[in-house]
Image (cartoon, rainbow, N blue to C red; front, side, top):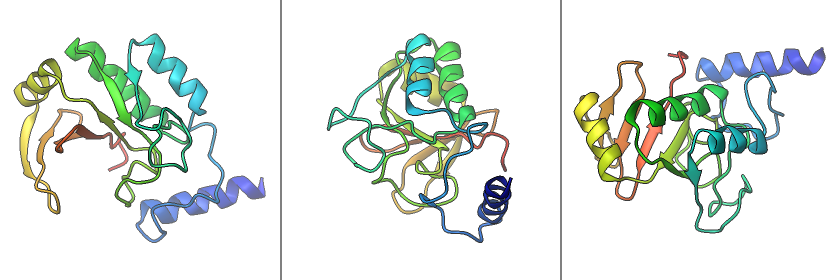
Length: 166
């Protein structure tokens, strides 16, 4: 029970922006996060692939693509995107180190990167509202009706699933 209270307190501080974005020493809440293997199985069943330059899934290596501590709602979001768009979806970035920090970050389970392709590009730009350019990297952003943000970075789409937490 003490561990649960600590997780709850940390989650409250994180949501309020009063705790550092990445808290790797706090173990994951299984109600919020699937294991890498469980997330991979869900993605596989939905017909979603993933790849990494290092051909690995270690969360602590930037060349891997990991789903460790990814939000269940993020997995559900990318699966929904695949279903409604009917596009090929290949995830190239998950919760591994090497992405920008912040509350709504890859590390904290809110983001995935997907490979661009004509189908996904057309679906995003044709169905989601243009939301301007992101500060820092000038990426064009598109906002879905659910409030999720799709930013077109150089080699991929950086997708932020707010999961109703905003």
